[in-house]
Image (cartoon, rainbow, N blue to C red; front, side):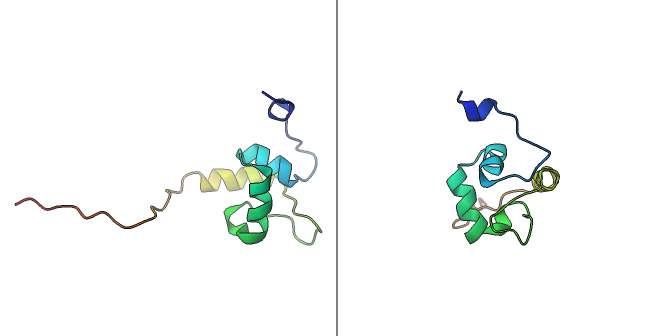
Length: 84
C-alpha cells in the first residue's frame, strides 16, 4: 500500500478531486474528466469556486442514496426462447 491509501481523508475542509477520487476509489484523472464532461455521475459540488470542490458530508449522503440504485444494462437485449 502506498502513502495515499493509508491516509485518512479530511472532514474539516472541502475535498479536492484527489480526495474524492480516493474516497470513491477512482483515478484522479477520472474525477477531473467527469467533473467537466458528466457532472451528474459525481456528487454535487460546491458552486462558484474556481476549481471543483466537494463537501464531505454531501459526498457521504450522495454515496448512500446512490448505492441502492440498480445499474442499467447496456447493449442489445437478449431474446429469450419460448419452448412449447
